[in-house]
Length: 111
Image 1 (cartoon, rainbow, N blue to C red):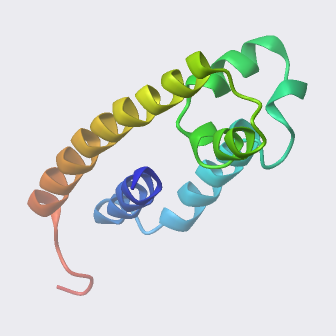
Image 2 (tube, one colour):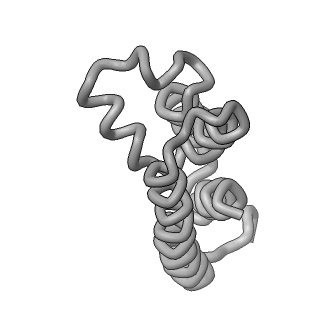
């Protein structure tokens, strides 16, 4: 659900620009770095580990893998599930605001 809301919000940027693919690719690159796809989060420098730990990106790949491998403490599991709820709420608000603003801005190409 979280991934859907983020991708949908990025897609809604098409109300203002036709360069959505570039924005999505930038987001994907940042997500690959902070989500553990490109490099394990434990190998990132300290400040980037902290950023990644609280970002929604690590919830898509790194956290589920660590959970399956039983490498998460109960406190980390609770923190990450809490982060999922937090990021779902934040992304829903951002999605709704972007959707509402986009509908006000909407005009069809060629119209």
